[in-house]
Length: 568
Image 1 (cartoon, one colour):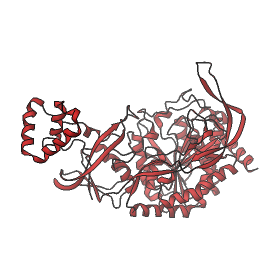
Image 2 (cartoon, rainbow, N blue to C red; image 1 turned 180 degrees about the vertical axis):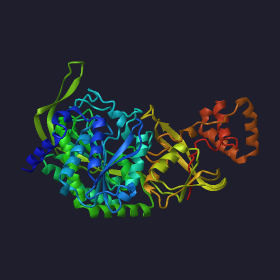
Image 3 (cartoon, one colour; image 1 turned 180 degrees about the horizontal axis):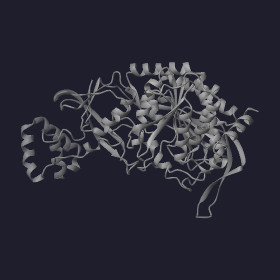
Image 4 (spheres, helix red, strand yellow; image 1 turned 45 degrees about the vertical axis):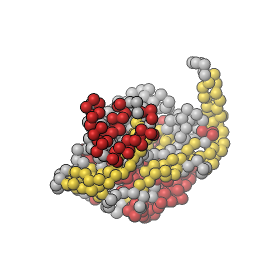
């Protein structure tokens, strides 16, 4: 009966803009008009324009709570003594079920104000990737069943915004980060539509990888919130499984939890002890069913957030204390294949048939033959690298792109008042391996080795001193520590250091090298050792002279030196 009533309610809500219009797909102007009209007519709602996007249009933020808002307050003031549930829609605008579900959700809550819980602010971005939505057309999503008109995955800069949270090459991301750091939400939902395998479920879920979280939040997520969400969705006739992280194959042999590093929405939000979730409604289910499943999840989530409001607030507070007192913070992870969970998976029978297009077998799911079978699921990751933080980082002001991103995230820092010679720890790199091709507009550094050296370095007036105490330490570790999986170094903000600027002419430096070896016994010993270890290089004048050059005072200190220094 509960499911029937809920479905009838959904159908009545869709009359607000008709079932046919729902299947047409959301339109940007209609979305903003809807929230604008709501904000004008309800004192417990607000609509803000919160920063630019690459499309030239402002990013909108909608707020809803039980009581009336004081419209003269800032976002930081509005969220005081509240739990904030932050929902982001349309990061991939072709995956539009969240945009429509949130519109229905807001309408339902306003029509039934007794269902709006006390002490919670609901914050909604109606559409994040505005540029992708206004490019909508038919046939954008080749593997998706509706709606008729679909937005485009790339934004106005053709960036995938769900790979842009740390590197923030888009104005969208910088505006999001500013909103996020003002709201300081405890809970975050990013709405999507899945791709990959076929199965019976309409909704699958990515939860923030618990092994990346502070222990208080990880325990609450695993032991209480996740089980409650899965149980509630099943009771509402939308049984879920963890996101089916399988592409081009079947899930029968098992699959692993999705590791959302800080380049992704929920990977970014977890750096600030915010529990993040990504809804993945299945691409091959009818569009109205995907919208209903997303709406059902939002309703279920709000109910569980209200039930556990105090416990969530305590877990977040304790997580900040953990971060403050933690000697080492994790920055890289790998799958732990030793720990397995068995899922009773509701899928379909399948076969591999001869293709009509070429000489190969193609995968075919038989949707008329549903079946259930056990599937191994690997939910755990283990930390493979962690880092201790210094007392201060020092960032040269010349790297303004990094300064802008730190400021957008509320990082406290102060400029040096004078040119200063400092004793610091510097990091030098070697054996760097760049990706073979551009990824989201940048040449990512896949592997790198590093060593630290204590040295005196000259810093200039205006260079930035960044204390770690009192700052977002997990965020700093994930961005400024070069070995972190999504550090600013790996994303290319400092790649210029890998290009040597000064060189030598062999015929001139040959005589200089002879004099250097005569006058420097230590260099002479190093050179003889190198010759024994590299007998094939002795016949190369370039390699011989390069070794001596790079071990002499002529070699530039800046080559492969990380611009950011540390004061321990």
